[in-house]
Length: 222
Image (cartoon, rainbow, N blue to C red; front, top):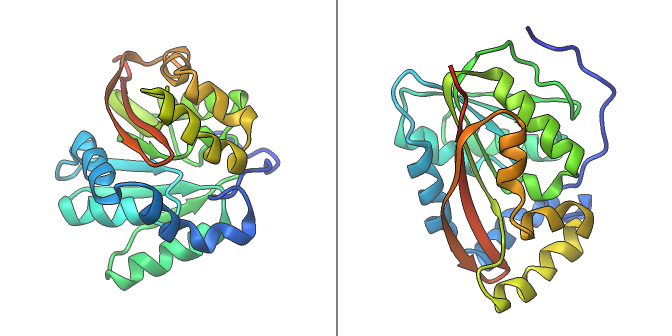
């Protein structure tokens, strides 16, 4: 059953501050191997025809464009909390002649019924959520997934070497130590398990200029 919305929560914008949101895409291009990390994400999503797939935290819409181009017969949806990125994402999708259901929510209950999606994925979102929001959103993802549905997350994880740990301080200065520390401690899989997912594992990583970007998957039991 779809839950009622609660009062909208505060959130951390894409680059930590509202005035930097317009620079998000260019910042990603400068600091990360964008083509590689997004391609590996889409590969793990493995969208199939007629699957209903949600991106939690669609940001500026780049992943949705790439996923739709890879699998035009899949049904993609997007959910985010930030009105500014929705404007950017809508413009980007319109420029590619892609029509899609992009929704905003208040930071708590998702505006979808139980067992709606075959897959839910998220990219560069969880390091911006506090511990409560991490767990609450993962429980909501679990709720809206169909039985045997899959969760795919790409985000900052435990640093793979000393330099990755040092460079990740840049991200922490922008997005805050409170929200990013669980990620760099490698705790995100534990949150995924606590939300009810099984077969949770890290499936790979990329070392970037600002930290270790990791991929995680989990499955909702029947």
